[in-house]
Length: 265
Image (cartoon, rainbow, N blue to C red; front, side, top):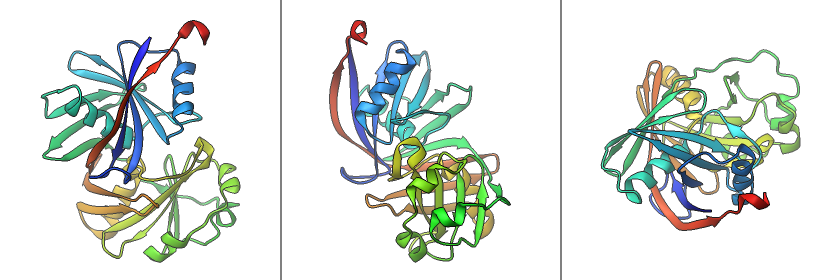
């Protein structure tokens, strides 16, 4: 069995920037463990698998260690592959997740705009072990799916060096640090060692939490965010109450095939 595979740099306009994601279009689902093994073999922060079903694409995402309920940059990468490799002429694509959410991705010139659920974070009262793991004391601590630590300024985010082993012990899949940006509305970094990702270069899904927070804080509906990892990425953000728009560019890095023999697995 030969499975097409693409690697896309999401939230980037040139290769070697943004966040690389693997994309595997399928005709039918592979066994869960096989998809998990492919993601582990790829050793990228996320691998997306999707199946076409009429006008809808069913999508699933795996890190090297676990399946996710929501992922941004591999969804953006999947839309990019459908438009550029599979010549899908729709300017709006519909993805269905395993848990039943509908995700729309629209295309405006070179920008992919993902319509995702808003996930406003709430204040965290139990702060035991968090400050020690971060190595710095934030001015605010909130959470939804991820832990969100808010700091004073961009320099705090650039210089932070958390203890990854201690982060693994926290009850959150990833830890996001954020602050007002010097040349953007806000900046962030995302650490997810529990999922096998020491630092995620650019994280679409964490902006489901960051956008409602910063929109209220800055009193702005539309914002530009920068994820200031080593590779870096630019995220176009819009707050639409119970939904958020997360936008970015993408570029294909390579095209290939996986030669898979299920009898030997």
